[in-house]
Amino acid sequence: MRRSIGASCSLARQPRSELRLPCIGLRGPLNANASNHRVDLISTMPQYTYVWEFFIAPAARAQFETANGPDGPWVKLFRNAPGYIETILLRDTSNSLRYITIDRWDSADAHASFRSRFSSQYDAIDRHCQEFTTCENLIGEFAEGP
Image 1 (cartoon, rainbow, N blue to C red):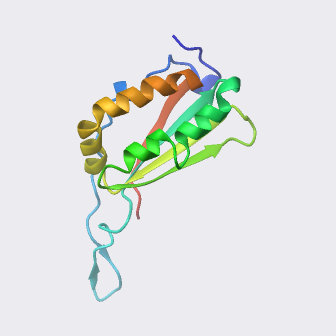
Image 2: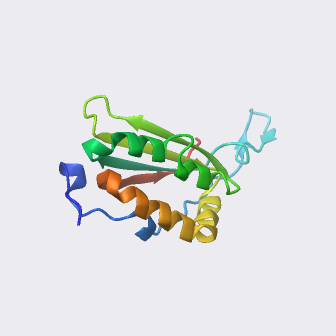
C-alpha cells in the first residue's frame, strides 16, 4: 500500500485500472445566431476531459515525466484510439512533487471504447508507473462547452 500525502491523498491509492469512469451525457446542438442557423459544434469540440492528481516519489521525477509526457507510453497508447485528442502534463509551481494530467477525448463513449479495447495494455502501463508515484487521485471528469 502506498503512503498518502496531504489532504487530497487521504485515501489509499487506487490504480487507474480499478476505476470505472461513468459516461457524461452530451449537450444538444448549439445555435450560432438569432436566426436559429444551426451549427453542429459538438462534433468538433472536445466533450470529455478527465483530470488526475499525482504526488511523485522524489527519485522518480524523470521517469514520471517521461511516462506521462508527449512521447511516453500513456500518450502512445491513447493515440491508438479513435477520439483521443491530447494529454497535458502540469507540474505544481508550489509543490514540485505534485502533478496534474488532463486527458481530452471527443466523447465519454470514445474513452469508454478505448478502455474496453486496450484494457490489458492500459493495466500493464498502470502497473509499471505505480512505482513513480506515492499517491494518485482522480480529480474529476468534465464535459466541455457552454
